[in-house]
Amino acid sequence: MRVFILAVVFCAIALPCAAQTVLKSEPLLLAPYEIVFVQNATCPVGQVQKITGAIRGLHRRKACVTLAAEQASLAVATP
Image (cartoon, rainbow, N blue to C red; front, side, top):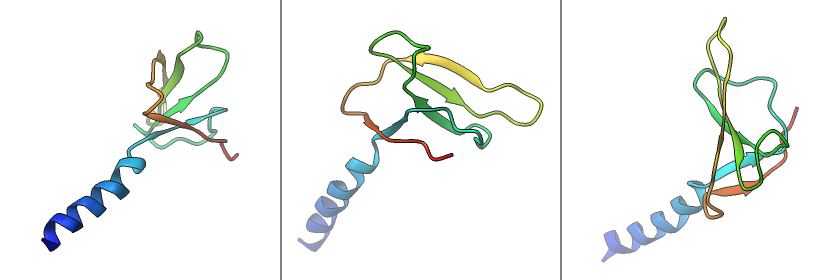
């Protein structure tokens, strides 16, 4: 019984943490292969820009993707 209750508590905590944060501006520093989502005017309505960090000497990858409302939460980037 304890294992079941522990599993339910863990799922209740883990599910909100699985949501992606959508930033309002592109961060200046981004670790290699780190992915961030940015909501700006470069993508059409209903899509966000997916930015993947790169190692030195390479450019970041940018693509417009669609996120479900359950997957994203809006946040403000800190410079």
